[in-house]
Length: 191
Image 1 (cartoon, helix red, strand yellow):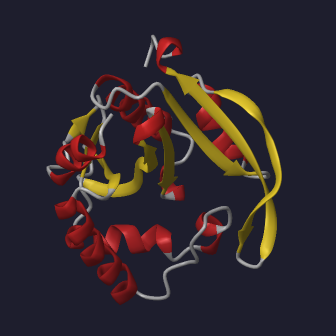
Image 2 (image 1 turned 180 degrees about the horizontal axis):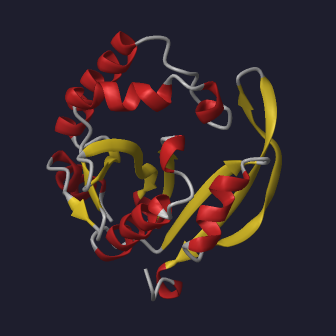
């Protein structure tokens, strides 16, 4: 895939749907919903970012993303639960390697909605988009060892565990072991 094609696709961020979810660009109007979970240290424990200190921080972040979306340089969707019409998390691509037709996905979910199979549903939709619309050959996901909930999502969507990179990332002042799982386009029949 060419970088220009990627920028073109994401400069008009496509809206995706599943039975229970809408995946759409994040908006400043999502600030309260995002702040509800982004301020929680338990949510950010295994993430690269720290808890949001206040709602203004969340609003500023969402304003910044608006500019990134317009440039086609942000590949992550707000996860909207249809029955409540509210943002309950995010799911999308952290990175896309156009030269190798490879993407990396990431996700976060408001803890209030855990255990309801919501994130596997969102990830399956993003995987399908990546393989069908972006023409990716491989999609991977990484997680900090100890984040068993994230690893379970990877297992549920058919990703295969490939190993652990010892102390591969310096996160919040400590080196972390990073697990990696991946799925190839020809393995993604049921997504």
